[in-house]
Each structure stands twice: as structure tokens, then as C-alpha cells.
Image (cartoon, rainbow, N blue to C red; front, side, top):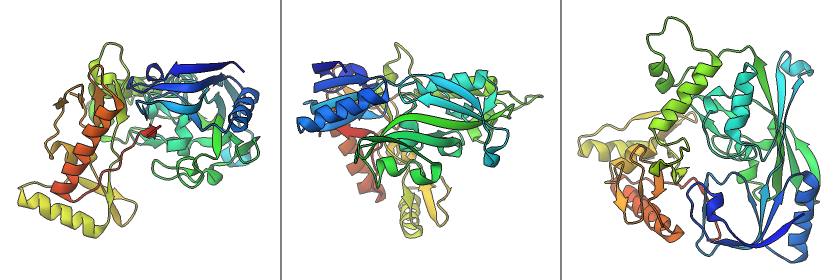
Length: 353
């Protein structure tokens, strides 16, 4: 284990903001992760586990303890033998692998299940934590097991999908058991020769008029193209890419809350775009709320602003601080609640605040 001190964290995040880590370790295997945990506990240091840095805002003061970057690598493919998933192929990936690289690997192997999750920044290890989803797919639909280090006893164990408690953008890793587990590897069960999932409206429009259905590779490229247009693909030189991704979750409202929102919108001559979610509740577009609260695409706020391509992305325009980001975040939240009576919940992990 190589222990470093006072390492800047901003370069390790996609928004390029944040102070230094007092101590820093990059761990390439389970043994090094265990060693780092033991070191942090022996010094009574707060521990933060860093993945791809894509859904993260680090405080300007940095992190006073140990930042543990998970760099476990490797993608292994084996035939599924369990009777419950007959014919599927297992892909076992290290938590430190690039997620988009992993998706590319599975598409080239002509296995379906995660092709619509192409272009999502970050690492494999972050996908079960948030139950990452986009364009009609979620990783929980394919995850066969998650290998973790349990910080209660510093032992490595495998968790089945049911034990992970997956729900919309959540799992036990970011709710009931937050801080207990460190993800080391994730195993996905995918369908060899399967057809791509083309249920999302943007994808259907993209392929509209085609005489032949798209294959997995074409679907992957279409998703990446759509994400690029929305500023949600990390592209060197694109000023809209210095962000933490979507900054606000789509609110899920009760019938009463939704009716109140519709009345407020009607008073302004507007209709609220909604779609059913979680049975009796309704999910509302956070982007719609943000834009109709005076924060349109390209909105500027000094060194921070909103992406010119996507209303939910707060971007670093150059030299921004975490305090700048929080000021804009709070201004948006306050205005949305004032106008629409809806509380927006931020999506990125806030570290060191």
C-alpha cells in the first residue's frame, strides 16, 4: 500500500473542484483495500471511498482523513451455469474499471443488457450504489452479485441482488447501509445474442424510419450521440463537461403534491409533463421545474453556470469553487420551491461539507 499525503482531489473529479486529501491511497486489490481501512482506523481518520469522481462535489477544504481510491481492475467472462439464468453469460468486473469501457466490452461480445447505459461516466463500482439507469435500463436488472468489503468486520463477501435492496436510483449502499460496504467487484448476467432495448422515446426517434432494427453496437453509438447532444458525455474541450452530471433528482410526488403543482402551473398557463412512477405517485421532470424557475440552459452565475445542453447540469466555467456550486444549487432549490412548492433533492455525493 502506497500512502500519499496532501493530494489534490479536484483533478480526480469530473467537475474539477475540491481541496486536498490529508491522506490518499489507491488500492488495486482487496488486500490493499483492507490494509487502507486498518490504517484509517488505527489513526481514527474519517474514510472516504473514491470511484470515478463523476457524481461528486468535494468541499474546498478537502477531506481531513483518508481518501481511498478503488482501482481494482479486470473484466472476466464466464458461462452462466445456474438454472435461474439459463443461457446468460457472466461478466465479472473490477470496481475500478471504467463503466463505459465495460459496456463497450459487453457490446463487442454481443451480449445485451447494459447497451443503453453507454457513455455514463464513472466506474463499475459506482453502478450498484446508485442503481445506475438511463434510456430504459437499470443495472439492477442485470447484476448477479456484488463483491464487497464489509467494514463491520473487514471481511470480503458476496451479496446477491436481493440483499442489495435495489430501487429507483437507490440501494442499501446509499441508504440503510451507507458507509458499511466498499464495492470491490460486480458481476453482471447478460444475454448473448440478445436484442437491444429500444423503449426510450429519444432512442425510438433516433431510429425512426429504419427498415431494419438496430444492433447492439448501433444502439450504443446512438446513446452516446444523444448523451453528447445533452452534454452528458465527457468530451475533452467541451466546457459543458466540467460537471457532476445531473445535479437534481426527478421529484416523485404524491397525488396531493402533484395536484398542487398542476394548479400552480395552470395559473401560469402551463401544463406539467408527468409520467406514472411508483404506482400511486408521480415523477416530475426536474429539468422542467428548473427551466421554468428562471434557470435556463446556459444560465451564468459567475464562475459556475448551467450547461448549454442540459438544464440539470451545474458546470464549472473555470476557477469555480465548491462554495460557488453550492450557492447556485441553493438558489435553484429555493426558487423552485418558492414557485412550484416542490423540494428538489441534489444527486451528487457531497464530500467534506
